[in-house]
Length: 424
Image 1 (tube, one colour):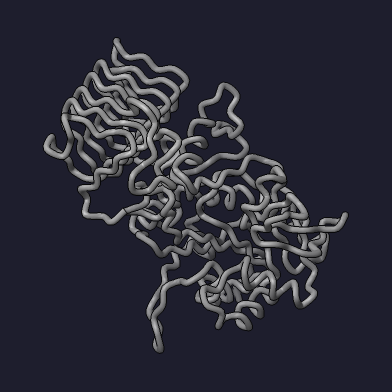
Image 2: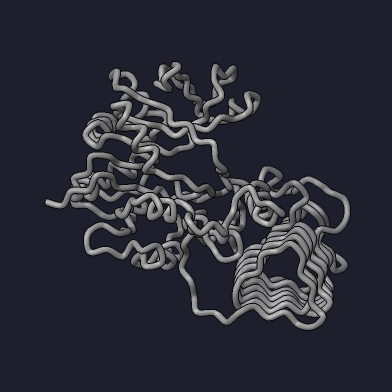
C-alpha cells in the first residue's frame, strides 16, 4: 500500500468576492499576481520547496482558469506517478451531490483521496495567501511536541487581533484556549489558516462533526479536537505573509514587490516560486520608452512610460502613455497618450487612445464602497474602453463599453459601469 508521511490539501474553491470584478469569472487563487504568477503558485511552490510532493487542490467556484493553470503539475515538479497534484472538484455521488459547504466539509468529502495515501499527517492550506514557508520545519515542531494538531500563527498588532482567530498559549506554545474574532483579545497570535493534523485525529473529528452545517475548521473541527483534550500547539511564523483578500491589500502586495529592498523577494535562488510558463518572446522597449522601478512580464511591448507598476505578460503600452502605481494584467492593450494612476487592469482589456484614470477627487463608490476604495480604479477582464474617456477614483468598469455609456466622456469618481451582465 502507498504510504506518504504528509500530504497537503489546498483549499482553492473560494470566490473572493471582496476582489470585485477581478474574481467575477475566476476563483481567487487563479488571479494574476506579480506580473507572471497566479496567487496559487505561492502555496504550491511552498509545498515542493518543503518536500511535500502530494497535493490535493480543492476547487469549486469558477475553476476553469485554475484547472488549466495547474494542469498535471509539471511547472511545480508535481507530475508524479505516485502523488503529485490532483484537482478535486465536488462530484456527484450515488445518494446525493453537494457543493463543498465549508472548509472542513471540503476535506470530509475527500476522505477517500487522503486514505489512498495512508498519511501520518495532513497539512491544510489556503490557496489565497502570498508567503514563503517551509512546512517541513512546522512538521518537525509538530512531532517534537507530540501534537495532534499544530496551527501556524503570526503575531499581529493587538489592536488588529479582533479581526482574526486568536490562539492563547502557555510558555511552551501549547494552545490553552482560542477565540474567534474576540472583542477583547487575550493574545496577539493570529491563526494563519495553516494546520497540520495527525490524520487519524482529523478523520475522527470530520466524521463526528460531519452533520454540522457549513463544516468549518475554525468553528467546528478545532473546538472539537480541543474539547477532547488533544495536545494542540501554535507554530509561530515571523516571515512575510499577506492575505490578498481585498483590492487594496492585493494592490499593496504587488507594490511591495517593487520596493528597492522588497520585503517579499521573488528573486531568491534557494526558494523559487514556480509557475506555468508560456512560450513568449522577450520584452520589447522602444527607443522613446521609459521604465522605472517596475516588474514587466515576458512578451510585453512598451512604447510609453511605466513608473512603480507591475505589468503582466503579453501587454502592449502605446506611445505617449504614462502608467503610475498600477497593475496591468496579461494580454491587455493600452492605446496611445493614456494616463493611468493607481489602476488595476485585469486580463485581456482593450483601452482606446487618450484615456485617463484616477482623475479628480476621491468619492465613495456608489454600489460597493467596501470593495472599491482607497482611490483605486478597477477594470474587469475583457473590458473595452473607447477613446478619450476620463475615469475618476474608486470607479469600476466591467464589460464592453462605448461612448454612449459615459456622461460627456467621463465616468465620475465612485461610479460603477457594468456592461458584462454580471450582478457584481
